[in-house]
Image (cartoon, rainbow, N blue to C red; front, side):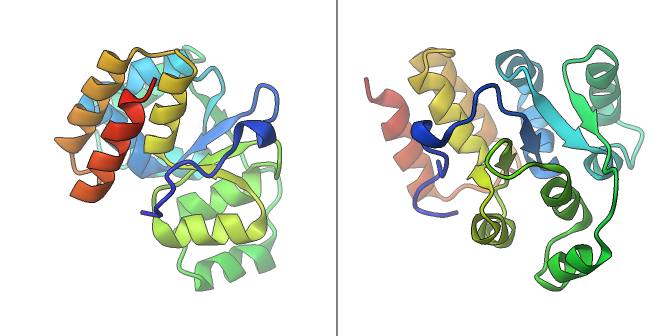
Length: 182
């Protein structure tokens, strides 16, 4: 994790951006029980068809939740219209997985926000000029914009900490401090 979990600054935030979520963030939100809440709070919650494939590989709860969320319009599934094979291969050689690549190739620089928590993916997105944040960065922004209370934000953080979501104790304490700021 970078020292600064929020890479998007308010001054750079476009109006009504699409938020492209990687599969690890979606899995963590489903596992901790806050996926539907995030879908309510983020009207343009987007995944790509490649992320959908990653999320629905097995017949399980996440497949049901994702399918229902797409059907109801809470999650927008974005299909990659054209594939830039050279760019795809470049991203692949940098260590990005298929879902991350599909997000970079589907989103619009300076208009959409990419939600990556993987360090390599974050580095590539940052170098390419994309607006970027992580799942914890979104949580902090939701609290600071008063879309969630401090109590709810703390509950979400604690729930995420009980999942497979990777977060160091140092980062956990840092986010706790940010969530408790007035």
